[in-house]
Image (cartoon, rainbow, N blue to C red):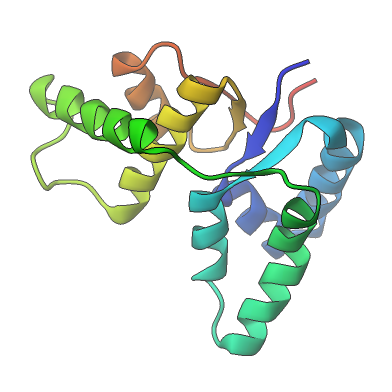
Length: 148
């Protein structure tokens, strides 16, 4: 059974829609032993808080469950440099311009490099960016919600 990391966009959809929230909860129950949180996803969730109370609530609801069972993936130096290589390859291929990417896209490259290094599958609704990344990092695996 592969390990999974859920991307930020899936959590945001779950926060905004009861249908997505229920689907995420079902997925989490079914695959609990195989679920991990990525530090970049945790950061993206937490910076979405409007204030410190919201930060604490987001942390308790979405981050703490992974921290409490030791299932947080924090990128190594090797992963950070691989993420840079992904960006260099995309610029070289003309798919991105130097400096022409957002912080979110940088995080996407970091998550993809982590997935390649560790071997997890990313669950994401962002197929455009991750398909582009996979053109230069074919060993990276992702799937749309809800696998299995």
